[in-house]
Image 1 (cartoon, helix red, strand yellow):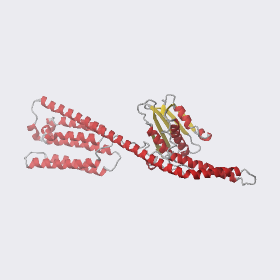
Image 2: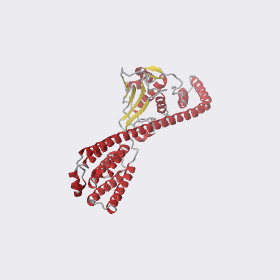
Image 3: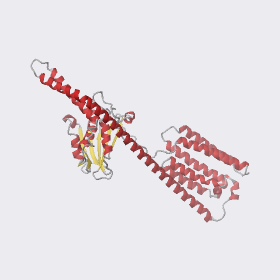
Image 4: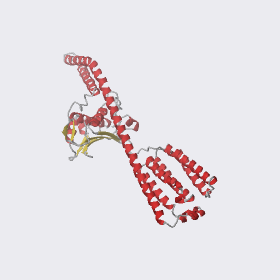
Length: 440
């Protein structure tokens, strides 16, 4: 459906389900503070507490973290694979923290609590997969701190500060840390998802409210225009009819009758446009809902198409598609808009597929064409009132706007999926009759 008006919220670029609350820039800044804090802590331990630390090893680890953060800082604006880069840096930080703990006291170092910070950061910044990966890496890293031979390879003096022979105490510390890591990852991830769902619900409510406000403004504007234009349009229609009758007299040029009929058809088009603008074309408010089968709805939508257009339409209506409860006139008009747009976007030799099937406690109507498709820029403006890519005089840019309004009002969803040069698929999903998801 390349040449058409489109749905502004078509679902091609859906609202993200896992949009990071913390951005890459924030993570970069956090890591700078971690590096600075580590340098301050090590300096204080060496000069004020006279601690014996393997400074060369520690400096090498901090250098690796510094370089990795410099790399992430340069990559933070690259959207592709950004999550993988951020997750990789967090896992690297867990590894560096483990090495630093091995070199500075092992499990007796109070900064082992920093593992939980990285788990929390992963849960807030990235998806659940990365949160659990960080939790697993932190648990393994914390467990390695109890391996005295591993510690002595880094710091020969570590043997002098080894844990006592009470293995039960060490096992208890490890189990306690593992439980804390699991609970931190689980609850922070759950809280983040809850916040995202609330943000999405709020954004959807704002979108619907804005759409209803636009529709109300459009209706008010059209009502005033219809009132002002009703009289002159009626006068033009009467004059055109009289001209058409007079053109049948002898001696009148043959083209005059055709011109009169053209004037009358254009007057009717003006009236139809005013009806669409005022919302009367979308009769979902005035008409009551009725239980309709998918086949009946499709047949009603195709009723006014010409024989030539019907020959290009292929139907695939599933027998198991549930009944829907919507106003027949409004639903058929919305589906007819999708079919006509598909026909307009296709050449005379290309067909259009209209299908209906059961899907997620509802019925899904798909209209697919093989036209020129749509670019992302066009999709971004799809469905805006008066926006259309059709030639001047071929479209008014209200069809999909009203179809989307109908879908929203009756608990449905209207989405478009399109690829340039490969056509477009329009999907109208309506909840099954009696479904809890339907609302008027």
